[in-house]
Length: 175
Image (cartoon, rainbow, N blue to C red; front, side, top):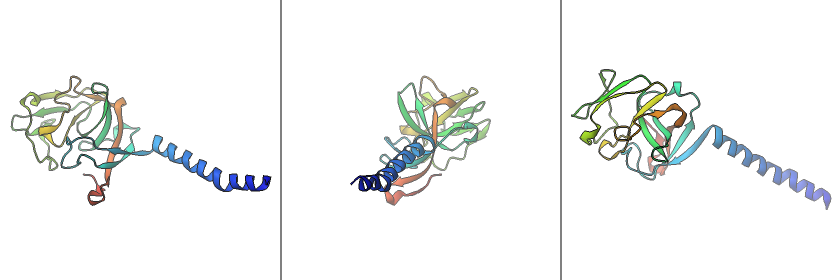
């Protein structure tokens, strides 16, 4: 009886416990899944999409145009937006809704509804160690243009979105 209990523990319990520990560590330190709760990134991301996100440990690897998840202390929520302004950038949003970074107009093929609230027009100087974000659905995105704290510190950055996992008919890499 003792050997069958030992055998059960070695053959079943230990592998299952090991797998759970590995899964928790991977989820904690490497990547995770996120659910899109709103239409602010439409049409790139739709409400209800589940996305694959890699953890970010070095924000120096982020590029303008990346889709990033971050913690907003102001909204007490995790948000998903497109990275527009890097530390030190000057972002200008014109009345025709064109976005310029450091004097160059951004090519934004992912923006299908460029309109927005005139309160968002203006020039934003991104401080060192911070980032400026906009949603792809500019007419329905509460983003850096409207937050009291316009810039997200690098300490709030959680991860970079790479692909849509679900629903399966939208499965694919993000651009």
